[in-house]
Image (cartoon, rainbow, N blue to C red; front, side):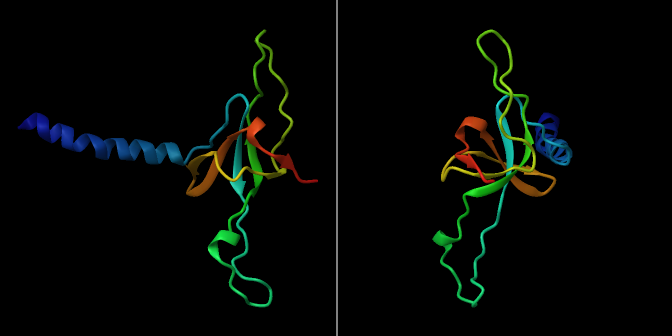
Length: 117
């Protein structure tokens, strides 16, 4: 009976730990890039509401970049992107991550389609 009470309390203790982890800064590793998607407008300037399928965005801003991919020799390839770059994202992919209450996505640098200039 006592053991079952300890098991019941375990998830709440883990919940506190995970909340603390979410408030920290996420630093991507290797060739990963942390991106915040740019929210598309749901309404035109004239006041016309756009359907949901047209409000999906495939653009974002790079928040953080990893150190770069590794070669077979163990050297690092310098990343092409840097924080602050505006990028075009693929329609599908990326891992959704919650950092400080905001939704970000982690992509491999090679999965990002292009950089806006």
